[in-house]
Image (cartoon, rainbow, N blue to C red; front, side):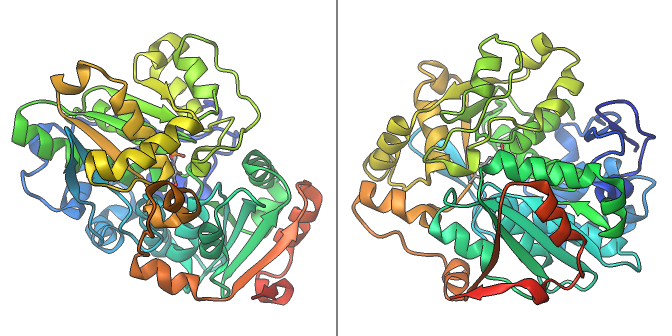
Length: 438
Ligand SMILES: *Cc1c(COP(=O)(O)O)cnc(C)c1O
């Protein structure tokens, strides 16, 4: 399978080359040239996630050297549980049982497993802007892997304390940059670095943001897995409600449906960042400055994966037919978290809470078919928001408890590209300029 740039100005690439490049050379994002029919039957009834992933992803890897190792990659990267549980009248797809307790572990671990098998002789720099969870997942996935260093940028004061601990707990081959700005600043700086051909070459840059095709593809696997289970159990195609920010997770679901998997309607739950909501309500695509909310990992004013959705659909009107959006305010997020234990016997993280609230707005539609609420993070990552609302402590999963105990390492920088580029181009051993802070 070949991968094309959304902007049409780059030669087609194989999946491995597209992963290595991150962004296409014309500044576009890589997308599969087509969506091979996976069919309902391609996915065995009771198969594990890793097996489903291998089946569904095989056509995208065909003719690439990675195809041979796809089975190993899936087994290595998708080795933690993704239970499909029930709460009230909906299913919950729990994607937060990986090393950093958010769904981004799936994509990050898959990408790392692929890139490690593609490694060349030069050390690669994995560059990532994060609004909270990506950076930790990427750092965890690449930490200690020879041939890689990770440089991650996160917005100062806009991630939770526990997220910050996850972003800075690494040392070794991970350089954490705390940027005095917002997520869009971080994303802009990363894009600018990739746009600088000389720097890209010198630092051997590779992307691990949700612009990386290596993160998007494996996310299709859990939709395939969950949709098939529900379809076999009920004979109906489930709808999915997805807490959305940069639209990577929801795009993977849309792609899974294009492969013919039994995915019904797709609802994007968004927070007070109105860009996506306005678009699906009929407005033209108009990125806005980011607004800070309780669901911080969804605070994105200019979601980059919209470019992929528009490319897939061909027009704004057609893109609006792929999904719809439900906006959820901070007040509603708080209500949904507070009501969780009583109403559903569950404690939701602020992101998952947006999807639960969106389900509650469906009215009669909620009972017409099965619905899957996608739970994107463990509530213990956001204890400062969640615990006062539910009135009890949320126990920390063991992997997180271990990370919290480590010292924090980061360098603070401004939102200007020049200073960042200098750091990036320097010695590929970040240990020299790291300031350890307890
Ligand atoms: C990243 C993230 C989201 C948003 O996912 P996108 O792919 O950026 O739309 C939602 N919830 C959590 C917990 C996240 O970390």
